Image (cartoon, rainbow, N blue to C red; front, side):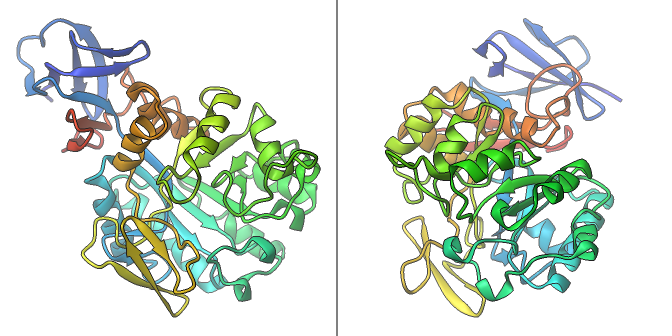
Length: 377
């Protein structure tokens, strides 16, 4: 099998962007990152001075390509969602099911399992966002779907058997022993749509909760005498926080404060994307209600945010242009840090020998001009 060399680009390494490097890919993995020109005999991909970065990883993708996972929990639906997001640099994702009936949850888990077994590019597992949430912080979720799972249902949640399972829940609805049991079975438990106060969320972090799904949104706020769930998340040095950088979900200043306060590597970009991303339709239906997406904002008729029209390339651009972070750090927030959150930091999220060749090329406008998953364009 011949090697492919990516040359003449600005390569994101551990030291930042470096120009005089060749990235050698063979058998779907990066086998070497060497200074100077490509070795003789290798096929070359001339990057023409563009940026070469690790493929983006999105842990919250409700839909894309005019497909909503809740409505199409099938291998074909998952493939269409992944294809829609790949054009924006997402080479790994968790298709995300918004709170729904148990039968739909089972169908979605089964479809993701089959998608991974069939090698659908980019599918890393599933994210179940609900239905074990707090009605007081429901957002666009349908509270009629909310309930407390029994043991059989908890078994179904942990039944994927391949890939990663992320579960968003309101930890105040669960005993600590249940949170620990889910974590022990490999479920990545995160807090979201939660009314938990500072003390309860801190306690949850000590009993298996790995992080928060979308910091600031649908959780108790930071106050002067009540730090709330937001304060617990920002203070805790071990938990991961997903953030939606679209100028709609969170004020830019709030995000800058959180990024400055949280240890480096613990804040990652997510999109919370809905079907219009990579699709042709501006509207979509959720729980029988039409949601509209205009100027990058998805809402109900009453104005409640309903996910986003954000893609990962735009999230990276926004992190640079709106938040003022350097491009190398913005790219790590979209690749390295979510890979580490998922427990895949040893194989994804870096351009280094031994890592899977999930790669993205960005031009000077930070728009995607090419992508590879496992070395395949």
